[in-house]
Image (tube, rainbow, N blue to C red):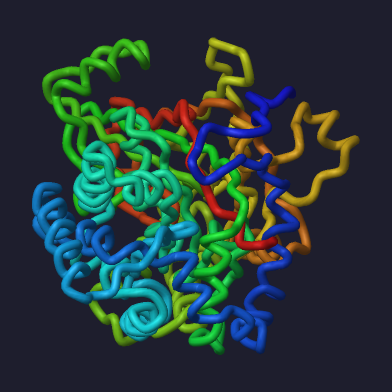
Length: 500
């Protein structure tokens, strides 16, 4: 199979050329070394004064952005910029142009709840105005008001604002779901023709951190994090940029609605439904419900999503139990046992049987317009659609496949920007455990440029689905099909590479 597309040598982004994304397996393997290295003296190599020169915006700009976001009004930011300039004239210090301004978003709920301490440390290293708490400020507010304020100042002849807007970079301190939330909001800039789109770096605070591993940011928050934070910020300002495929998921339900929607999934407005119907070759009834979302790492259906759903509910109800990645993984293991993945026979109850009973799988290959049905193995109880090749805290369930096997199956080597998704299956919990331990490979099913799932309930009344670690219950109807379709978004997300 040929790849869906090749990457140009450079892109018209103010942050510089865009590199071809590497094969993701090596990047994940070095993440352990990165986490260890960050604990030692390497974090102290970065001089604080030099770091501030690299990443801190001039006073009037950072106050403008903070004011615009807080007021949700770019005019408030313009007024704050004028006031800051007047203050500088009265003796208040105004810094010069920045090499690559960095704005940090912190999710205090991710992973081991390091967010509050990290936020204080970031205030010490850079400035309070360039650090946003995601429990207070949504990424969309920054995109729609903060960046708009810089653009408006640039239009008024502020050359510093123009340079800052062209070179600005984002850092997300959180897990995979948090990073996906930010990337989704930044993608609105493409739709609004407001390029360049800022690239994104990561401080890994989550449990799995597969996005962070794939782009060289490490797999966990380091023990010596106070000194390591300077290294993260420096790499965010100077690291090369890679491209990442984004995948849109559209769910069409004949009736009913999804309860407890995750951040990654939104209900489609009536106007958008008119676009979905002809695009998917279907007509939607009055009772039908539609949802859209975007993922960057993986989407899965089945037992692993059910375990994730149980974990998320426990974390929300009893947050004191989820105090770090190790505790989180123990809870995951416990849910895997109690919900029947290990100990209950597949025929014990309908919800524990193979996905073949409720699901039909269709794919489109590269440069093909017709759907091709792929037979589902009867033993598969969890189906995973993977973009990054990393899954479950840096594991490689797809495996490092030999060229002969790739040619035999019609596959190509996986990259994060090749326009292809890898589809594999997990059987019972024991099989999944051996796959995660990399003793065996997962059940290879297909490699595709577009995917469609057709689900009917039968004896099931629901399925469990997750996108980038955000799970939900998917209602099913016995005699009517629920369609879940995945297609590539026509533009790439931009990621900063942490490994240099």
